[in-house]
Length: 296
Ligand code: ADP
Image (tube, rainbow, N blue to C red):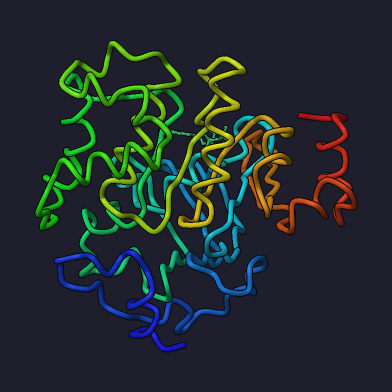
């Protein structure tokens, strides 16, 4: 499939921004072959991330598949959130953070010089650990993204309703759209944040431990929602909850951190495979030790 054909079949083509330039992220480098989905929406090649002089995570090469859920798991501090934040350039906002290697979206270098970062974040939305609605009405929270990214919208009420329905929140809020989002429960706030991400018509949604602040019932609702969304969106979730990774994802990447002589712990991608394989018959003994609860 050519790049042009790709662009006609992804939701990302609703953009009114100039397309990001095409580059070959592998040009001139001797990269390791990424593993994972055959049809990578996002491909990482020899990704390394530094905070100042500290190498936080290295050796990350993977293809992230379309319309499926990919889980990033591993012990605390192994670089899962750091890698996730590279996928829509959120690390740009972290002082001292520096990315090496390649992050490509449909073959386009996301860190290329002419890339429109706002457009990257519209196509690749993010939901955070703690629900973070704006101190605005429910309606305005959902309408915010389409407004600030300059999407041409004929009927904002329709866009808001569609996003709230997709986030399984419409029935609970349809009679109070003008009320402040802070009045919602934690689980509702998180679904509102998902609706806010959906409203800009992304192709990919990144979720950084989206259930860790929620009770089991709210968590189950988000997990059900993720399963529904996966037919339309590519979802990448960081979770410390292995059962959650096993329940919701089709592919799982296991990371761990190893200390060097100086005691600096650098995270690494150890194994990336189907979730079934990772949880039933992992190839690496470190993965097995982690999923059987022997460390982490
Ligand atoms: P995980 O999500 O697996 O818990 P993180 O990606 O949060 O891991 O962190 C990986 C490493 O990077 C850790 O050693 C952490 O202390 C470090 N780190 C994360 N964020 C920052 C930051 N903003 N500044 C400096 N170091 C950071």
